[in-house]
Image (cartoon, rainbow, N blue to C red):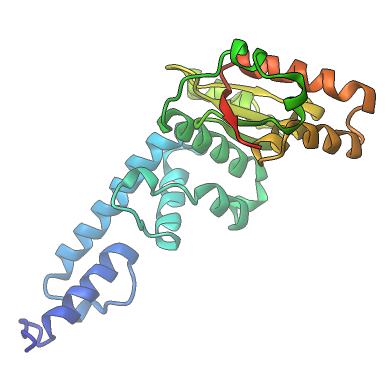
Length: 263
């Protein structure tokens, strides 16, 4: 049995309309909702809460756009991507893609890259900690087993490709809340972001190192990663083992490797 409300609508239907109005600012006709002004208060409060949460996740983007433009962005984004998770922490996970594909933001491609950088930094900060693998452990592996060696990487490790110098802009915005110049386009650069202890670290990858890390993170064995480097023309055949060993030593020193996997 359905329960009628003061508007004459079944309660379940009224609740569904109220939810649609609050979450998506859509569908429900104001005349069909008892106390529409109250519903508008709820809807505006939801947008303000999202603006607060997204401002915390994307402080540099907020500073770059300014309060008015950032508020407009949040409103448009929330309408396009209503929160689907019980925690508002994840409400902004689609924002980089939204900026990349949605006018007028898509015309300024550095906005999506800055947002992607901030989101990845946040993910690295929140990801689970893990002990790093010591070089002495790998040193005990017999040489004949190295071609089949597979590595496990730190759970905080993130990879990002950037075409704009948004890292410099991000640092400047975080330090002063201002950016002297907009990020200029440059050649594509691969970056890694990770948190070996309390602080999030980041750095660019060299061309060959980028391919090697991606291959090993993707599950390739050490020997197969060397072949991939050679076939991609990133390194000469006779230099591949030494280059991989050099990069691996750096990754171990940075705490990027946490273990090995069976062949």
